[in-house]
Every structure is written in structure tokens, then in C-alpha cells.
Image (tube, rainbow, N blue to C red; front, side, top):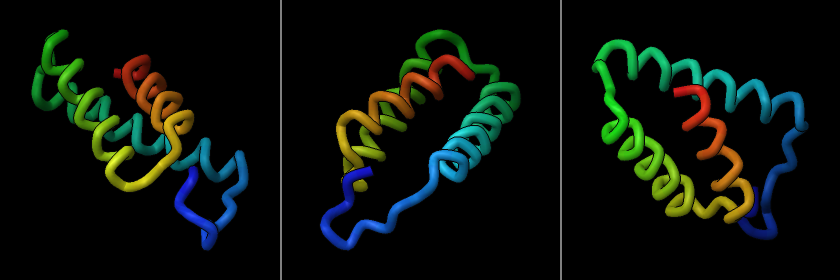
Length: 72
């Protein structure tokens, strides 16, 4: 996560926990809304754009988005 010089460091274990929770919520969303392939792609793109707008590094955004798509 590249959020400037005042960036707070986060442990790998904590980051994994945060991402797994987010992915779990995405799966619940998928199950509640019956997402097909196009809506899954749209969800992945929206997730990617939101992380990018929040200022996360390109590498983090790509990794997190790939994880989301795999889970969903």
C-alpha cells in the first residue's frame, strides 16, 4: 500500500486477514445478488478503480483485485 510518506505499516498477517474478510463479504454479496460473469467482472473493475482512487499502489491493487476475482 503506497499512501504517501505518512503511511502506516501493516503486518502481512493483518493484511491477509483484512483481504480475506473483504473477499468473504464479496462472496456473500455474490450469493445475495446472483452475479453472473459480467456482473462479477464489473464488481472486480469497480473494486480496482476504488482502490486506485484511494491511492494504493498499482501492485497492491492488482494483487487484491486478482484475489477478489478468484474468490467470487
